[in-house]
Image 1 (cartoon, rainbow, N blue to C red):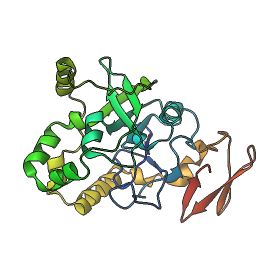
Image 2: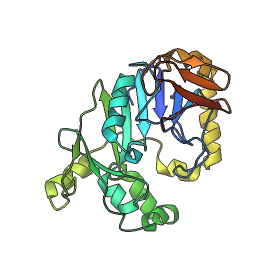
Image 3: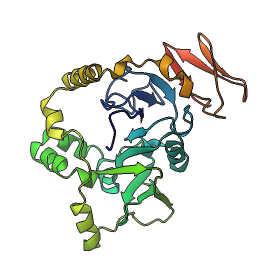
Length: 273
């Protein structure tokens, strides 16, 4: 991720494992852990919102992180347009078509790949994964397979840096995004080495609770948790009409489109029903 030291960073779909560098967190379902691997983290300014209707002013963030979220979207084009609207640059991570077919997350709606130019290719997922929980359990129980997975992360995850514009295409064809019978395509897939975040071996050695504690300590050490929700109200707008908002004790009001958003347990909920 090409983040500068003074960049204001938004993370969408931050869930239970936000990046240490993220200044502002956004997640659609903070009260529902069904589609995440743990309890939501709320250690920084946090808003509940749909990535397709973000409650932030145009270009209000220098960098936007979006990991393991776009595959859940109803409309990826709308989601991507919002990323480009609120951010100047960013990073997207999604499962590859290969990873989706092996692991088969039932709540994912889209398949992803990148073509030879690096363009993000997106196709609606129409079939369930073929292997059920087999590869999930192999990763957890077979250290040799886990080592293979971690050493070939690019086979299972697409990582896409962007600046200014996200180059993508929605594919309507019934064919696979990548033809694995074509040896050239296979070699390109094997040779591509994108960014790798924290390695799986470290994840397996260090317990989840300890990783969370370390990340929390790092956030505090950087002083980023000193920014409060009050500090970012100036860049928060109505997710529907993008107008300024009126903040009250338990609700937020848009006088332009006559919408009212709730505040629950200190979290503003900007969800459009």
